[in-house]
Amino acid sequence: MTAFLTSSIRLDHRYLFDTTLFIDYWRKLDQANNLITYILDKDVKGGYSILTEAELWAGASDKAKEKATKIMLRPFTRYELNITIARRAGKLYSQYKKSGLSLADCIIAATAEHFDLILVTKNTRHFNQLQPSIISVISY
Image 1 (cartoon, rainbow, N blue to C red):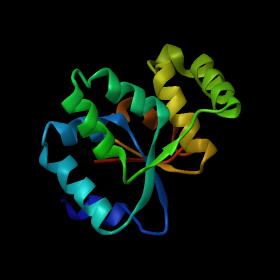
Image 2: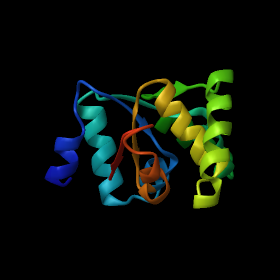
Image 3: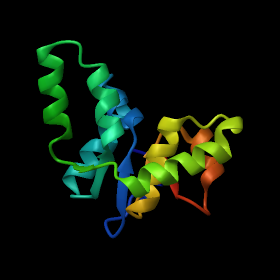
């Protein structure tokens, strides 16, 4: 893991791990594997959006992948969607859709904002337009 990423992940912060991290972990990409290993070894506080779970389940094409998905997500907190997050995501989407932000990205961003989490993603292109006024983003 790069020194930048290690120094970016602090134990006194809480994080929201985007779908990209878990997909890259499945793909056995070194940076994602190293980051998840670091997160688990250091007991970093963080989790994933319920939307991330839905996206991962969309790719779980058989019982073995479903089981692997459950095991992979087990150590992390699941952040549920609620009315406040849904309404905020709708507002963000209305404001940013012309610049390429999807409704799914807006739900992720609204979740991070609502729970005061730092978003960890490989997809910084869209989320960077929300920094720093709405959310903080770390790229891996």
